[in-house]
Image 1 (tube, rainbow, N blue to C red):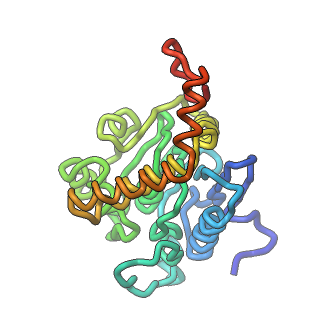
Image 2 (cartoon, one colour):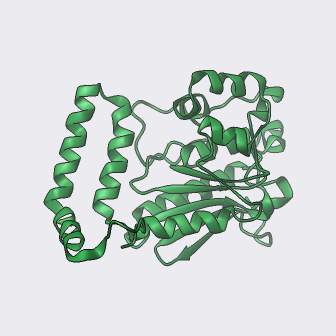
Length: 272
């Protein structure tokens, strides 16, 4: 049990329609022990269940994203051992070792990456929809040197994001990967100045909140669901979700706004 006199290991802040979740164990470089993992997963289940929340941002406190699983806890045998998940994993299964990495949420999560995102702390950004990365941030499978496996989706999500060759380079060698190389690989979506990832991620979240939500979320859902489908079945699924968007009325309303002059050929402002 955590000491009640200590600061909470997971902080949740509600900024209107945006939920900011912060890993708050700076004394351990935001490494995650089992109680923190459970709180982190619960925070995202609550976000997904909250009809007022549209986008979440995941950050680490004090300029470090996450150093992975707390190896002191692992070495002491106090890091929980979880049962092998059954396939298919429930979309709100909150029992993954690092917390939320089995969850498949219905709404987007943006990772704001500062400092080190290594080992299990790399697997958390891989779970996010997007990664906004500070220019001095570092990714890496640092657990390679300690015999700690990737068991929070790292061997699955990393090759899907950056290709098998790049993924195996990182997974086999455990070498550090800086922000610019991560951007070239496709691991970082955007590279921003040091100290600004949280702010920039919130700005993107605000933009996503302003879009028609049914359309955006159905398109997002199609992207994730296509991995388990044949090409033809994926096209059918996309068509079904697209028709559901049309049926909702959002498309008609958007087209009417466009026809009324809400957009012009001289602007790229997504809010117009």
